[in-house]
Amino acid sequence: MIRDAIPMEDAARVAEIYNFYVATHTATFEVDAVGEAVMANRIAAVQSAGLPWIVATDALGIVGYAYASTFHERAAYVHTLSTSVYLDRGETGRGLGRTLYRELVKRVTSLDDSPHAPVHSLVAGIALPNDASVGLHESLGFEHVGTIRQAGLKFDRWLDVGYWQLGLARE
Image (cartoon, rainbow, N blue to C red; front, side, top):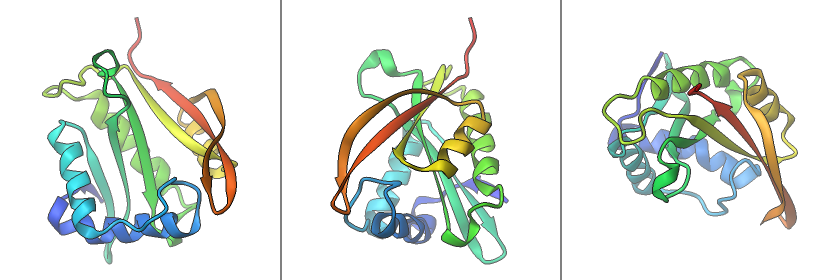
């Protein structure tokens, strides 16, 4: 099941999923664990901006999440959003990321009561190398639009960040 995140109820589990990546992967450039209160504030901020933060659940609880956020603060960027998806470590490779992404795209394309509507494009930043994430994004129609070399330092390695874009609005 996929539903809207509930900041105070879901923050601990969302932070637990995220903090696995903070501690062990380059998928996020964050280096310190994020607490429950900080995560609740992040979820609430995205939702108060009129944007979706969704969670996927099974019988045991939350197994993944996805959200859209502001791409850049400048006014001209208002119709371009940044996307993120994170899965519980035991849920990768089963199609859940694709399911969450499809629902996220559906929700952003149907935004009515948001300053971001109509959403024109989505941008995903991927720390490289990450063949699974690149494959997921490209399977959904995202196209590689550029790479910033040595954009971040994590785990004593310089990492490139590639950007993939999905155009939503057509002229």
